[in-house]
Amino acid sequence: MKRIITYGTFDLLHYGHINLLKRAKALGDYLIVALSTDEFNLNQKNKKCYFNYEKRKQLLEAIRYVDLVIPEENWEQKTTDIKEYHIDTFVIGDDWKGKFDFLKKQCEVVYLERTPEISTTKIKDDINCSK
Ligand code: C2G
Image (tube, rainbow, N blue to C red):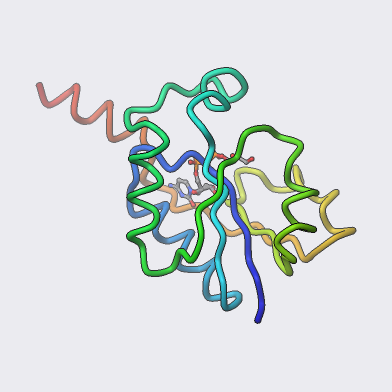
């Protein structure tokens, strides 16, 4: 069984995220999503989430491509996650291209093209403009 892992905040969840998760799952048989915790988002990623961790986890667990959701609490946990979950492939959007090449010592690293026209910022801006 080929095991895949990806990381992210996934807030507000949109079809760009789904495109990523669908393609990530297509690379193997079992997809783990390491979901950024509220604390990690606030303190390290400078992201204030609309939905808290539990709600973002509930949304991800409802997606057919996702087999397991675990917390992402820091930048450094990837190497231990790959060992602990016997990961074959690390996947993330190409906005991170090159940033995680150091993981190639442990597993395959794949950067997938982002869905260009959608982002959480765009969603928020469009809603504000329509008011
Ligand atoms: N994504 C995408 N297309 C978009 C928006 C996002 O393919 N239009 C991808 C991102 O490239 C990422 C995943 O969806 O692979 C989740 O996006 P974010 O929640 O923005 O993740 P990010 O904040 O980049 O967190 O340790 C890694 C970080 O936790 C990644």
